[in-house]
Image 1: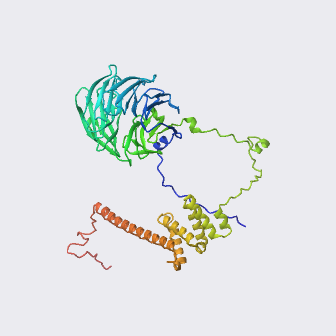
Image 2: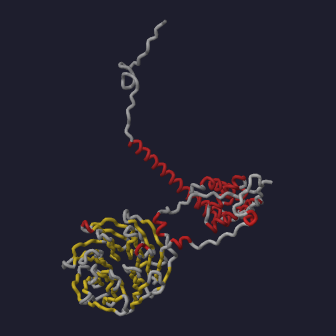
Image 3: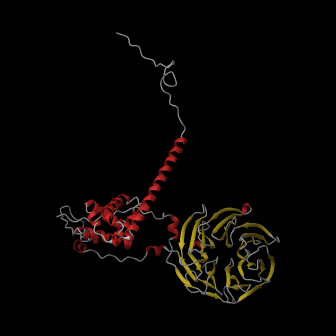
Length: 525
């Protein structure tokens, strides 16, 4: 007796996301480490010098974490209210932070107490940063002013009040100590020169500005506000270069990665988008559990640090080659024949090889098909579809039943619940071109078997109405597609130039002059 052949589950090509080099690169991070802070995390800043510690500003504290530490190595708590914008100086020795109490504090990273305090704003200070030479501080406040401060003298150097709403972001030039940018909730970006008493460039973002970023060459400025990320060409007087709208909620933070080749944006929609800086297309996407307020990227993309509204700090470290190899697999013990014949034994030509029979394991629906329980086999396949949402398994069983000629028997004798499940499967997969032919046959059989029961069950009638609506919509789609194909044929035909074909003969129509074709004379021999 021939052995039973199990049902062959056909493997269809997946329509998943395309695997690119960026996908492989940005997925090469370990599982995130999560740390609970005391409040919403408003700022993350990496030290420019090794070992690249980073400052996390949350609630009334600024914590400094080591590259791989899960506990802060330093904490600054001398704030009377919520702290904002903790930033390192270029040498990594000093840190500045604003506060809700309108004061700006300067800390020595090796100490704990503020070594300078700058007072002059009247409302909360959300922006604090060092200038390129490190001896001045830029601040921006909710009192609509931005100021420059001298660190050695603790004195205010200059003040600008050109914005008409809160200043929530700002950045200083790393190439020129006198230039800095500010962004405000009045939708504008302004470039200031400390040698001039007013702004030298203005740009309109169109939304309240939440974050600013300068490219390393400082020829391009990136602004984030609302759902938009915009790139401005500073060499052309602040002309807009590109506008990106890939987030569903407000974009809150920006940073550059891959040595300036990738732009990252974080949003309240819980996503971090990675853009290519050549064409500004999204090349990767990170998902998080809560809305994101701040984003930081370590040099060489060694780690991604994200701060969320629920106070969770998420840290992802890049995998090393040792981590990628994984745990060393346990060596398999040598087989018995190695001990008997030796490790290098090769069978001879005259040896007779006795193979061990391979036991065949059948799925539950195959066991039922083997016993000719076609109805129960179909039920088992439908149960797997309900549990795993894989349409390939019930489709393979339906094709096998159709091949055997027992599909009608398997569909008959169904109660209301089972019939609704079968109709639901047909409706969900009928327009899938991979299954259309088989499911059309199945739908015709169901209508033939249960046409006498129409009107007896409201659930079944509702499913039949859904099936009818689906077929009507699909028919309309096909008709529209045929009309479009007809239009395209006309366009393609009119696009090709017409060529005149010359027929043999004296005239243009192949006839001789006078309209009568020549006839050869036949001479009698």
